[in-house]
Image (cartoon, rainbow, N blue to C red; front, side, top):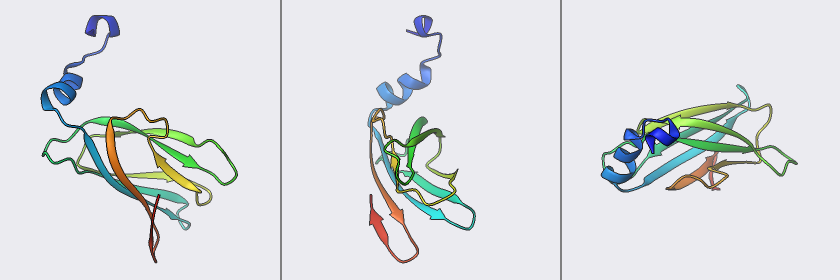
Length: 118
């Protein structure tokens, strides 16, 4: 498989075959109008102490648009923070909008006065 793809697959097999389990995430997002940034925090919460190294797509839905703008981020720590420039508050932020990641997650929008589950 390495010869055919031209890629080193050691990390892939270490994570998905020898380690076992799957990615579990807990995260939140908020919009900061002052800095015009969507701020996302993601934490890996799988039961083992193992930290997966993977990429995740984040979809940002602007008002009045049916399709999100999608950006890919690398996750290689227990907790990461992401900042996405946005001129105005998005209608919705969605993890893995194309549904390609083998994972479970809880992802909520947070505001100063409440928390809304998305």
